[in-house]
Image 1 (cartoon, rainbow, N blue to C red):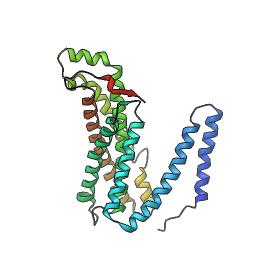
Image 2: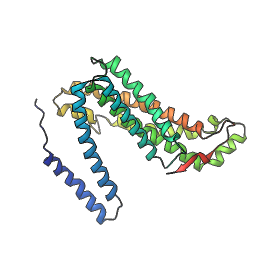
Image 3: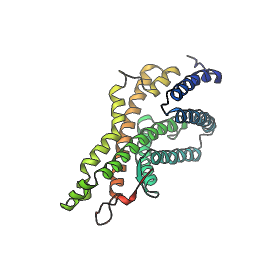
Image 4: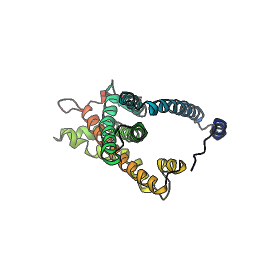
Length: 265
């Protein structure tokens, strides 16, 4: 089945819906107009540019260009993690912990899926590597940012509880046990909800895209199952690493709580 191309003017018609929503929000004084228009503009520009980059990348298929694009995607995702936290660690720790957690989890799971499960030739073929890594980073970014935000905010609000536990002789891990559990739950909940509703409430994006592109539904289903499994695993490990590293940074070498290391964003 031939894929139906979409002219840019047809996409402009869809953009009119966003414009109508922005006008409605402005008239109703909902406070969403500016952020909605900025997000829409960023989406159009970023996706148009990445489309040009991917066309050149698919034509080249050189490993160093793929690695460079993967690095840029990781750094941008790390920047977004910092931006989404209401309270973050001072200095470069917020960026370093979030980016490091995504690197360890997303890159490891993506490479494993490419080399062991899918097995393209070469294993870093951009047709598979870039979309998989993009989905992994996007979802891991959400999980890590939610987990770190809940961790930092909860420690800030429950300072007295944490310090009382420390005075009773508990280690920093024991003092943060309940907070870390809630932070992990916050980071994992979007992925768990997506898995629970897949195929019943919603048809996931990758599966829908493959079907629209003419792939047999059975093949699209297999790829979607793979993607959702590795996304959930990557998000879980990423959130776990981020919460562990972030929690440790909130205490000094003598296991004293250091809220001065947090800053309001």
